[in-house]
Amino acid sequence: MRRDKINYYLDIAETVLERGTCLRRNYGAIIVKNDEIISTGYAGAPRGRKNCSELGYCLREKLGIPRGERYEKCRSVHAEANAIISASRRDMIGAWIYLVGRDMLTGELVENANSCAMCKKMVINSGIEKVVVRDTADTYRIIDVTDWIENDESLGSDFGY
Image (cartoon, rainbow, N blue to C red; front, side, top):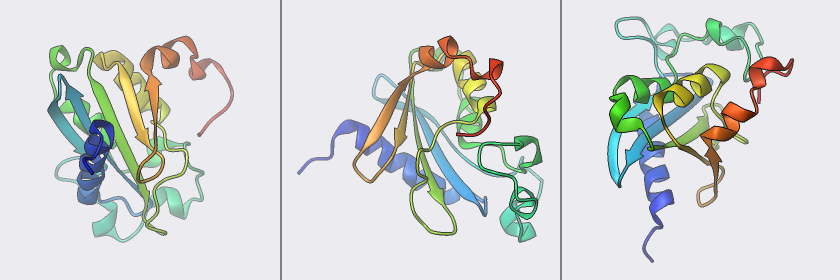
């Protein structure tokens, strides 16, 4: 049976995450517009800096920082950010970004995965219209980016996801 288009793109994003160097959670992202892949991104240290996989530890893990908090302590540029950096804004306006996360300890997909607050701001400014997040091998959520604009979490006191 032929794979549906959304899971096809999520499968590609899942393959992209295999390049990630995070020891905690790896993510892969692809930006697609008009059925064309515009760019890809995975989590990894900035070019030229040592990755956590090279260092052998994750500082956020060492410090016991919960998921979704204190990303200034993270060595990685996130998958969404790397995909956005590699694309032109004019190509991203109206595009969709597909996101898949894997817990590196268990090998399982990240439960309730979502973009962090910093990546959400980049997605909003990039002009991307929808975010598709894989929940299981065959299920996903589609998030309308206007929801992130209208429900501005930066005004609240809740952190993480």
